[in-house]
Image 1: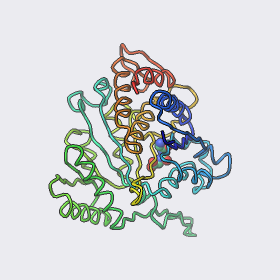
Image 2: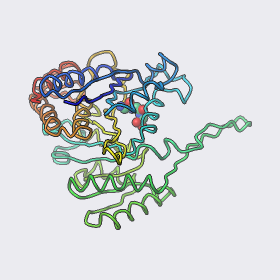
Image 3: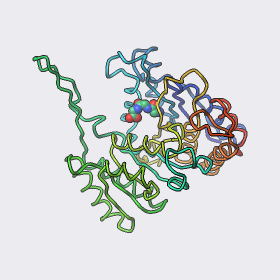
Image 4: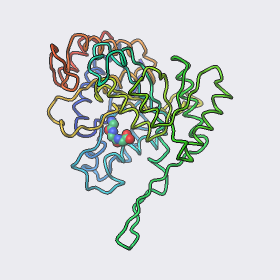
Length: 367
Ligand code: GGG
C-alpha cells in the first residue's frame, strides 16, 4: 500500500485533546485496513508562536505543502491577545489557507437523528437536516488590502478592512457549489449583500452567469445574507448548498452549527483546485469550532467535529468512501447509544469526556 502523508497540526486550547482522538482512529485505519497513513505532527498557532515567534513556521509550511492532507485542530486564546497582528495564532491558519490556495471550504451541517432534540430549534424544523455551506476561503475581507489602523493625528484613528473579489475567485467557488449540488439535491443558494456592497452586486452577477452558461439544469436562488441567515434558523431544510463569501460563510456556518446541537459537531474540508497532471488537490480538514480556551485542558471537549473532519479527509483526499461511511455510522451509533459530551448532554444519557467519546466512536468503527 502506498504511503499516505498526513500532517497533524493540533494547535492550541482543546486542539491537542481532540487531535489525540483522531490519532486513535488513524491507528485503527492503519491496523485494520492497512491504510498506510504516515503522520507527522507540528506546532501551529499560539504554541508555534511561543516556540519560534511565528504562528506557522516555514518548515511547517513545507510539510503542509508536501502532505497529502493536513488535519488541523484549533488555534487562538487569550494568552496571545497582545502579540503583533501578523503573528497572532489565527495568522497561522490564514497563511495555510492562502499559501495552499484552499479556496473552497465545505461545512456540512447535518442533524444526527439522536440529536434532533438537542438543537435550539423544534424537532420538526431540524429533523433530517442535511445542508452544505460552501464558504469562499482565500479572498474577501479576510485578505483584501489595505487592512490597517491609521492614526489620524488628531486623537482619532481609522480602521480599514477591504473586501475584494475578482472574477476568477467567484467563478471557481460558484463552479464548486454547482458541482457539489449536482451530487446532492441540485439546488444552490447564493448569499451576499448586493443591496449595500459592490462586491455583493458582482458576486451575484458572476454566480448567475456561471449558472446560466454551465449549470442551467440546476436550481439557483439568491438571498441577501441577513435574510438568508433568518431563513436558516426559521426553516433550514429549504436549503441544499449555500455558497457565500469568506466572512458571511464563517458567520452562517456557526449559526448552522447551533441547528445541529453544538458547534462541537461541525467538521469542515478546505480544498484547493485539482492539479492538472495528477488530479491531486491540496486539502486541510478542521473542526469549525475554535480552541475553546475556557474548557481547554479539562478533557471535556467534544471531539466529534474533529473525528468527522477525518471522515471528510478519507472521502475527499483518499476516496476511502467505505471507511468514511463507517466513521459517520460509528459517530451516529455512539450518539444513538446515548453517549454524550457536556455540550450535547441530555436527560438519560451517559456523560463522557473527550477520551470517552473518542473511545466510544473507535469501538463502533468497523473499518
Ligand atoms: N478550527 C478552527 C479554528 O481554529 N478557528 C480559529 C480561527 O482562526 N478562525 C478564523 C476563521 O476561521 O475565520
